[in-house]
Image (tube, rainbow, N blue to C red; front, side, top):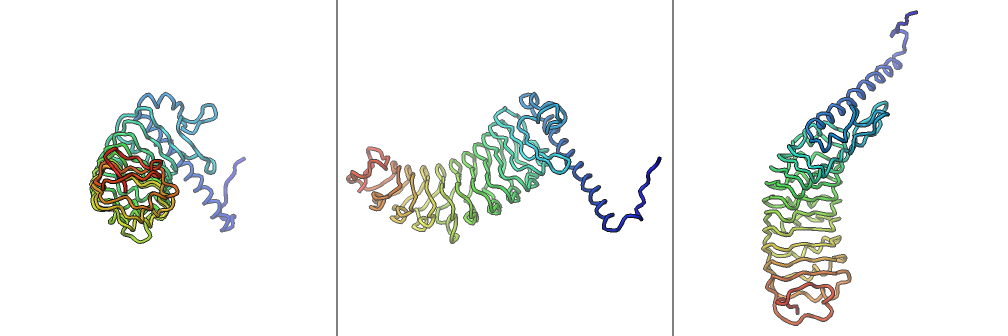
Length: 333
């Protein structure tokens, strides 16, 4: 007995529903298999340290075999999509696997502590759902691609301990949900884009140990900048100028790390009024004058490093020995 479908007998709205259902299943099949193909390309490009744990043809597991190690999948309709890829500390050698950028449903990409080389491909901007990008402790190089600024869902960006050079792209200011920005231990040059101050949710910014220049005044020139910033690491660069009194407007600041720069001038007393400031590192600059009296009475301040500057000699107040770390040649008044 044969069966034939008479489309003319199906109401118009029912026909539309049927077509969308067929198309939807086809798209799910296409994208599901596309992800499998992409991961198999990655598998082929990686060394034995990863391949030994990637058994079978289905990265998400096929019932008899578990998912590939480091691969997390979610179900969409009748198919599964790859949402997390965590392959770290397995000594992967070679260029960044461009096939990763075909996994359009990724929310987490963690390839840290490997030996990846070359640039991050501009196709990284395709991963619109990515929230966490962790590539630290590799040997990646060239410029940080501005296309990272297209990852509107990104909350954590870890690019530290690589060989990136060039300037910090101002496009990073287009990441409204960014909370953690780690760019330290690279070869970055130029000035920090003041546009980063518009990031309303940024809590931690570490750009230490680079070759950055400029002044803090330039960095905080946008009114109302960095409203949520708790930790600011600018150490071991080539920043100049003084500490502007306006820095006290960063009222959420808890850690301020300015060590080993070329900064100068006196320390403004307004900084001592940042309510939750806990750690203040000013050592190995060219600061002069005196430590303002309000620092002596700060409620939360635990450590304040001032050695290697040109502060005036005097008598160290008794009440400061618990909150200050100074060398024998440095005195406070």
